[in-house]
Image 1 (cartoon, rainbow, N blue to C red):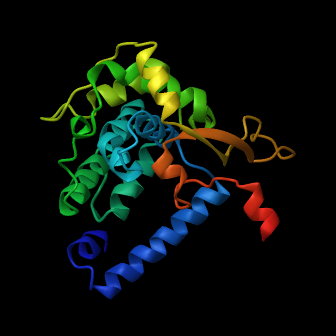
Image 2 (cartoon, rainbow, N blue to C red; image 1 turned 90 degrees about the vertical axis):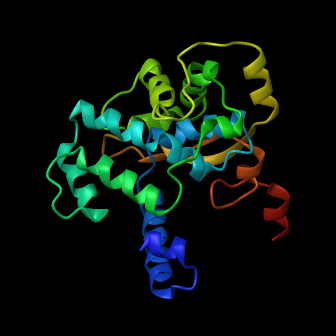
Length: 232
């Protein structure tokens, strides 16, 4: 239904199903959590505020999921996800990548480029470390642990097919300071590091780093303004 809704905004049946899927995904995020892909993208758009969160997620999605497929940590789940994307005869975890690429092509977003948003090759390790420093809790939700180098490599190789390529190099000073000036710290919910037992909370309140445009939008994150709460 998503490609239909993108192609024709007047297709109410398609929009109804997309709206329902959006609601269910919201429930999933509240009851559970997101994975590290969101941490990685929040770092990208914290350094580059013009980058929409969804566009950044699309740019790294293929290599992000390929990373876990190559780890063979949840093969059956990827098969089911491929089937959910319309590939009913999917039998291998790699089929999910095929289905994901087709979905992006059908929605007209397969040609998004990091270079169009000013992301440079030297940034990958800085982005990886920023993702873990500001939203490290989401990495605990990954099916297997991810190192800084693996995190940077996903960004590095994510645009290898005719797109801009980011290399794994560490930078200090200029990027860190510029990101700080373009970053808002917002109150959000992250997975608890001790959420593996029955007597500890699944989630904890924590601050996270994000860009001003996103922190101003309640869809992605919420700014807690005490004056407004008191006034209400």
